[in-house]
Image (cartoon, rainbow, N blue to C red; front, side, top):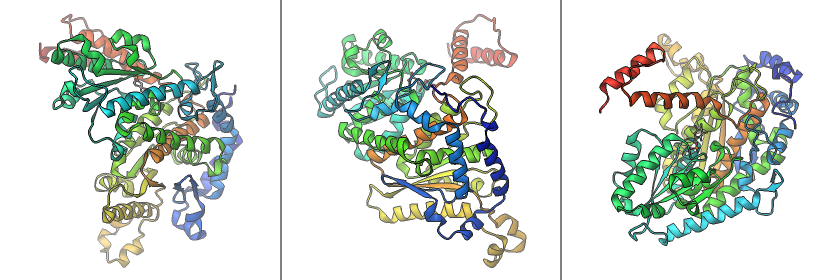
Length: 546
Ligand SMILES: O=P(O)(O)OC[C@H]1O[C@H](O)[C@H](O)[C@@H](O)[C@@H]1O
């Protein structure tokens, strides 16, 4: 099989050289001029799929830029890459694994084979088990050890076993069963679990221990603490059965932890942690919104999957977002990318995307281990609007750094406060306009800005943004949005030629932490770190509570 990005360095192909030349011609052209030259630009540089509308006209591009970027995608074999992923090839080459989060939302009659085995029936079997379990908890049939109804669900997990479910729960709370309280515990910092559990009755609490590997120290530490508290409260080890279920790809470790495999919901090594929200990792979410809404989320993601797989690149939403990202990262040298949902319900979306994007494409060697000749993942960050406007937007408008932005807006709110909604959306549109067009010294002067303040009160503009509009925030559209960004990340990773599906970069710190943990808990003065780390450990040892 061809590997990500083919075998030739990205900078040596003609499509790259053509983009370099084009960049030189376009770098100083202002968006004001691009809009002035083409009265229909705001309608033509757009793309739409199944209700998701992307306006990419406020980017520093022309139609030719898009053609050249599409040519780059073609030259890097993106079409083959997409097919390879969707058909179960081992595109995660360093771990020799297929990458099949798309199989999690495949229809029942689809067939996707890994090592000769069709994985679709397995996916649907787990979905059905999850659904039956979720219904039992929601109907009050599944009870705590003392016979009380479950009122609280605590998801214990970290990284991909936390960020997706937490983000989606926050986004879809309007669809959640209000008789259940949900908490998401991730940090090994004891304040996380102690605050989460402080006001909960353990007799009414179900813990969903979510971990692909079931060896992650934060999750196991939190789960052990929760189990101890349950045992202390109930006084009987048999209580674990009623209060703990597991979501994992590692049944052996689940059993070793003491959770009955009957109470385990499985997923597989071909689902990456950061791509797992549509797998059993979504169990807490399903408990909240119910199986039907969960399936609607899968259907939304599937719609975006089909679009990604079949739409021409110049109209393909994930491909366009990916290509525009490459344009800014590699040609304009943009170091960060802001994601700004004008929807409070998407407050955790940027945090979720940070793992999706930065853990996937934060690589400095290509799939074959050769140093990358160009930059890869930007720093992804963001906060919901309008909050960000009163915090960091100053820098977006007048700072020295170019920050390409994705603005995400929802047209119809779930609340009836239309005045709020109009104000929110007015701000979104205003920000993209202000960033793109700025304010010239002449305009400022006409408004009566005194000459001595002029330099401070002009806006250079020419700051690019995408605007994504979604009709409503529902399980279906959230599924679309998640898949949109998953495939954007795939597009970029494939074109750069990195393996977007491993994460060796998180290992070193983990291994060192294990070693330091034993040193913190012993009095052995022998420390063999650098002088800074030694001194920090010694200081902590001297001061820590015994
Ligand atoms: O689900 P788990 O196996 O507990 O892993 C949780 C997380 O921790 C790891 O360190 C990885 O960097 C993440 O990709 C993963 O999502």
